[in-house]
Image (cartoon, rainbow, N blue to C red; front, side):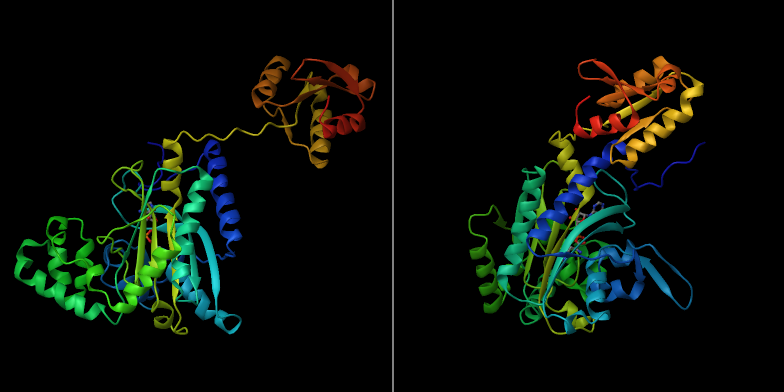
Length: 414
Ligand code: HAM
């Protein structure tokens, strides 16, 4: 039985790579336009980093991390990138250089989940983190930038939902309220939620199994403090004109969020309908040993964006090579090789046969490749120090020296 890729991983075959490049190119261009700089982090970190940031009592840390190491050191493949970015800022004392950083990333992340459409064990996130400001305009900027990216890529069928989940000032009272509301009914909740009641009652709100029960609980947005309400109002003001709606049920599955949280969903995706999500995290940088500064960011799944593009029928035209060199017989192959390499050295793109195929078959390949010009290297041409150029658009032929052929191809005419 031949090997198969592990479940929940995806191979990107050559025909799909142009779509990936299109997303990556759009990310660099759009995020760059808003002043974000790219940063790259290792794919694994000390396990403790995720316990302290993503949160001990979250699905991700409790059951979805790939962890390895020995008695002394435990490492985990990153299930998300925000903790790494927080670590990088603190470890490299970046705040000594500047108080405010706008960073973006694209990279693999790993979660041990049950694979299904849009839910992988190795997936890729593109994301941003704006660190060093509590300005609500920055929350809005990240949302608008996410929308800009999707528009640029041609993803139009999605919904942006935002919510406020309070801050360290107002959350303790809400947590108490929640505990009191849940406790009398706790027997009806799932095993996970029963355990979470004492440890992290807030997480019960995003339990998929208990939605029928949690739906009736008081939404956090109705129990935030005046400052949180003011913050949300300012975010909404800055978002004026952009498509979004407030959804009191968005709580997100990670522990570090404060105030604004948001999710982008698309009905093109099926059950795993989140294209991306994010929010503000005003205490994480301090908790990681950095200064007491506000921060906000989001991440989106590249594979989910590609699913949206597929559903919209996005295609990328394969680029056409400049030339294909055919050798009339075996004796001409070394010269055909020299001709092709000389043209590539001049910045032209093209190929030649490496399978010992007949002249006819070489022409078929040339045709299929979409090459604009075919260069024929034969014994007669070689004797005259020339090659034959065939223009594949109009079928015209001419003879030229290699130097002339290079100039002709560079000029774009045959
Ligand atoms: P998240 O909501 O856990 O947030 O993940 C962000 C996005 O990553 C999801 O909306 C989804 O598109 C994609 N994703 C997550 N898990 C999978 C999976 N198993 N398979 C395929 N795609 C997946 C975060 O990770 C936060 N770090 C976002 C953030 C940045 N918040 C602040 N800054």
